[in-house]
Amino acid sequence: MSIQISERVSALPGYPLAEIPAIKRRLLEAGVDVIDLGAGDNDTPPPAVVVEALREALGNPALSKYGFQQGLPAFRKACSAYVERRFGQRFDPVTELLPLIGSKEGLAHLPYAVANPGDVIIFPEPGYQAYIGGTILSGAVPHVYPLRASDHFLLELGQVPDSVLRQTRLVYLNYPNNPTAAIAPLDYLERTVAVCRKYGILLAYDNAYCDLTYDGYIAPSIFEIPGARDVAVEFFSLSKSFSMTGWRLGWAMGRPELIGALTKVKSYVDTGPFLALQQAACVALDRSEELVAPVRELLRERRDAGVAALGAIGFEVATPKAAMYLWVRLPAEMASAPFARRTLEEFGVVTLPGSAFGPAGEGYFRIALTVSPERLSEAVARIGRALEATRGAGVAVAS
Image (cartoon, rainbow, N blue to C red; front, side):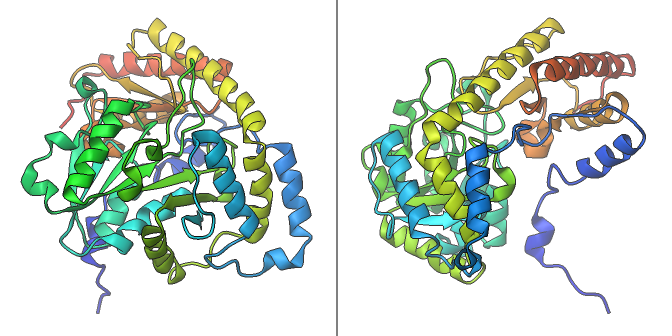
């Protein structure tokens, strides 16, 4: 007798990073010089002062106890103070803020708090897998919105049929965007909030890359838009800005009823982030301006090097104003997955095919700015050779 896998799990698409570690490990064992531009996991270490704060926190036995959903009051206050300094928005650290084990789990758990089976959830494609994962596993109905370069990769609710909007309970937005690195103009956010208010749709605003901005651009909070507090929950992460991806720390903010609902869900599935990590993260947030600045400058240098190197081999790539990715269009009719596999297996460079982010991502590949400018230039040179080899072998047609 076989054990049946649930329909919801069977409906989940393959995760884009699932097979890469095994291939990478095999190549490294064979002595191949692999350059990993796949995961958005910076090669720089966490700030030394934050690491030292963690060492000190680990010596306090009280910080090894259950944190539960309340977590560390000092962390809640640090999150609230950061948001007030950064965006001019005041949120009560007790009732309007919730510590998360990385923003990913909060994004994925949110549908359990607000959507019933059969409710529609809208999310972008290409997009972060937590959106579709939370939608399917909660029993909601996914409505995929294809992001297009012609629309500046913006999810325009005004283009969604009225019949769908009336059934929609939740929409996910992510700007600065992964994987396209697009940014959201204020007028776009204003009309999006207006649609959400009209139809009673909750807006989950994923702001993980808000501090990774360049050329004078400053990413906003959704709560800078009038009326957003009625309909939005915003998610923040310490992963990218502070090179703390493995620490798994973030938080959600919104009005008390919404944060309370997410808190109730999480009380049944986890006991909150490790308290010692929360203690150390207070240092990161309290000193965010000085600690993020060198990371931002480093990524700007890598962005410029990557754009220049890609341009030199014939790729047209816009210079992004935010995030830590380059979203690169492939030649017409060239399928992204075979190209990415060849680039890895034959040339030792990890990239992510656009199709890994959903069918609407086909025709692109993503580069993460996670290595030095010199290594990035070398990786792009290898990508150019992979492109020549793919063309020489005959074009793989995207399906």
